[in-house]
Image (cartoon, rainbow, N blue to C red; front, top):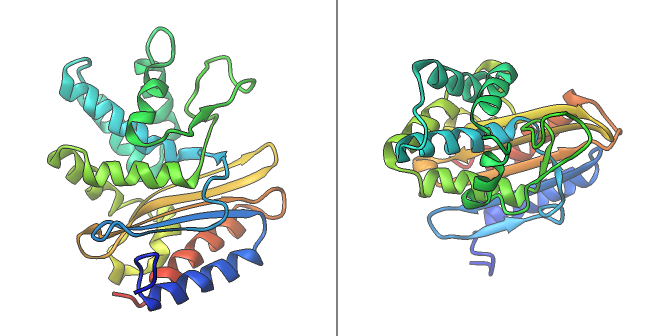
Length: 248
């Protein structure tokens, strides 16, 4: 078995994905993890900061559930419906409501907690909104998203993990790209994020595939003005297909 811990088939798949993204617009960061063996494969943009777009809603959901469990807040039925909307259809209005309601008097409650879920490179960006930090203006790396999804799968209390996994496995049709490109046999689940930012569109996807959610995949595509959202959507989905398609 290669030193990376992945078998030869995966090695060939990684090479194909690397060759593919080298010809695609913008920069594409990729992280693949085998939760069973601990093996990790990263490409050369795994540490490149990119706008999080809506992937940060996954971290927000984790934070809200854990604060509710600890008794520091009490999530109402409305709050829980808003969390479901963030995870299922990436509802921006739901994210706004929850952020403004639970960011705290100093606006830092969410951001202070995010590194504890593995998002150690996450950095809010100034100059775009009166409310700072704001969920919609933050940057992180594919490594951050890799650590976040693995925190969800490996560290959350079982009932919270199962709820989030269930939501990510049954996302709205407009969320079924990126990691979803692994194909139905891979039993994928994902949280996607897309936006048009200064410097161009970003298209991101993080999630899991395989029996028992054995593998995780984080892909962040910063188009850098070289293409639009549909181009990035195709890129992210094809990465997942190249790495996992037909594997299961």
